[in-house]
Image 1 (cartoon, one colour):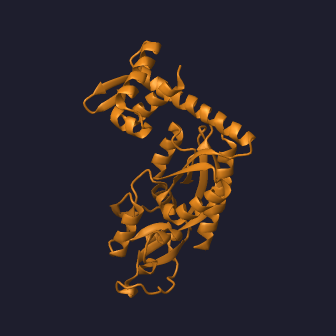
Image 2: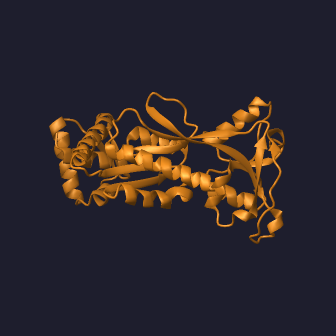
Image 3: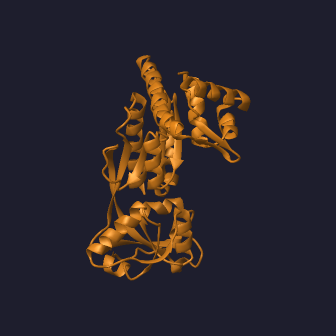
Amino acid sequence: MDLKQLEYFVRVAEMGSFTRASISLDVAQPALSRQIRLLEVELRQNLLTRNGRGAVPTEAGKLLLEHGRGILHQVQLTREELGAARGALAGRVSIGLPPSLSKLITVPLVLAFREHLPQAQLTLTEGFSVQMHEGLRLGNLDMAVLYNPGQSTELEMSTLDEDELSLISHNPQTGGKSKPAKPAPAISLQDVANLPLILPSRPNAFRILIEGEMMAIGRRPEVMLEVDGLNAILNLVKEGMGHAVLPSYTLSNFDNPDTFTVQAIHSPRIMSQLMLVWSSRRPTTQTQRKAMDVVNQVVLKAIHRN
């Protein structure tokens, strides 16, 4: 089996289009189609169903896609390990970040990679937990920073930090201007349950955690709006449309954090674990292991500085 043909097939199957795959691979579409057809002839099976909307893997194609990703990953690992034997930590490292942390750590993470892994290629992807889990499963991500990931035999994880969720509300004292907000008193979870909340939809990790803690005291959150977007949630809170329950450092994603008030939640506190997660099904390279150390240092420094 030709590795180039396998790479071409995987790219077409993942992108669902010969046109998009040819652009991504920088290969002429006729040449791309010819190589995949040669692969189908060799395997004596149709691998893709072509239609007006693109290309969809057949059952045989789905099987090859699953194995093909693993084969290409092993080839990448081999190349990286051989490079490490020459003293160069190189190769591609893809990392998933949650929206609540993305703006806070993207720049320092890139700078840290340039310093510690100058020959590595870094790919950053922002998304919610469901997307990150899928990326890890498919091999599109090498690691991801996740809140409260469930235990799984397919994942390995290490704790980065434990965060306390706070009530974030509109600060009426600013009058639309950026003024320092007075410290707000702490609020009980019972009182939070009486407030109109703007929460992400299930199965967001914060949503599940908040509902679980409220159920423990016999309450349910008063969900005013479900919004799957951090900046959208904060914009709505800024306009006084409701309250958010998030780590206080998420306000670093907003240009005027003083337009909000932040209240600690007690009785009980809502504690969220921030974890670094990677697949247990694929071996990690020396480059990836070094990348994990870099992510750990950058995340902790960014969180505790805010």
